[in-house]
Length: 71
Ligand SMILES: [Zn+2]
Image (cartoon, protein in one colour):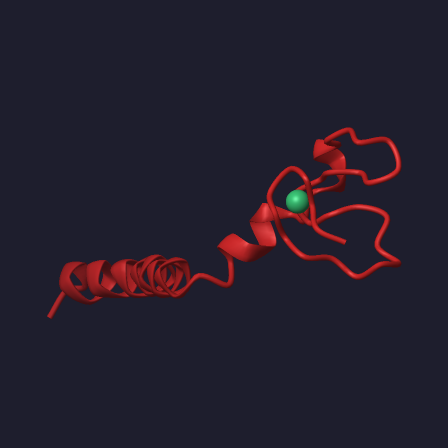
């Protein structure tokens, strides 16, 4: 069946749509929406940025120690 809210085609057995629209009640339940955080962490830009921040956190102290150590 097609969702009235977002137009997404869902299986006939589906009780609600990915957007949160509940077919039985016709209501839009935000709690049923797919977790957006999971999708965010699958985003390539977020993964690259996380890797950069992690690298900075690891290498910045090493760089500081290497430069502040007596010869
Ligand atoms: Zn929908």
